[in-house]
Length: 446
Image 1: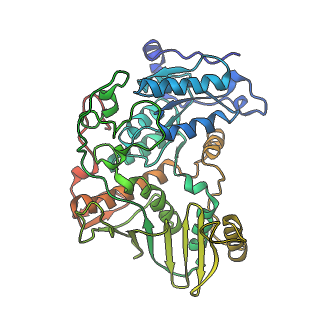
Image 2: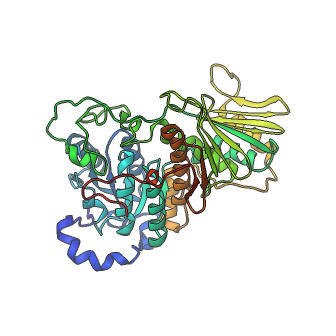
């Protein structure tokens, strides 16, 4: 079974430098029905933690794809991922690296899947698109606003396909909910409630003994070099989501975790993709680690509020739409007309039945039809072929991330902000230093 030659970074840097200025064009033969192994879309993976387990399995299951390299700073995770790939292909060919540049700068690789902690997303993505790679990157797309703008500009300039892993856009209950809102089925929207957990706090995890097999300096990367903590990076293969996401240095709390899902859906329903709020208002108890109530206000006066609720809830003059993973409710004129929340509670129906009926009864002649995707990864691969923008294109992923970061400013600083969502600048109430971070060592986002 012939595979592409995968030279090391050191071997090809000089010889490849001249070619990186040109877009990498995939031969059309890659996408024929019976694709030879040497002609498949060649993909490398960066970040082999728990989120990547599912991603790797999904890409490996698509016969248009050839996974040839994996990268992680933990040798146990990295080698485990390599073994997974090798078992799939029945050989030992998959390369295992701890430096992502061995993948992003390799001209034999066409695309990169990124599932690192948030503080690495931008640097790995920028290296990939600047070296001609299409990218699938987990949400939130970036750790800060400056990075969101940099990635968008780079992907546009290099004509790369970048899919953000905001997978709810490929779940039909969310699409139907947003189409109901966009087509005025529940009337004029006044507010949206979005439900997710707590803000991030500064890292204060106590130092633990360092073990061999983890490049801790590289894990910290562009962030501060913190004392090692298994809370931030559990060693080896594990089955839970580590709590680096609850630190400001490496993540953005639940606002950038689940908020990146539900605020993304809110902006889809409001028609605010690649746009954003014009004002940010903190709650009175903004300093509390469990605070809720931060508000994003849009130019049309609609208020988005962080609450303990039901995923994303749209409130209009004629009704309401509530949507979450596995649940859907349409309320018209005060009456619940379609609802599914739990199998045990809503017997005799199903989630699919309820949103399908809502769509059939209210959207048969809809003027607004949203992008329909049944699978986030398949959509990415289809768009790599067509060179069209995917369902959660870089500009969409960036604007959703920016909205999350703006909400975080309300909690981090108690700031009441006026914001220009097209120029991405503070009008009042904010400081430019909040838009970026202090980068450590060689890692920079220009």
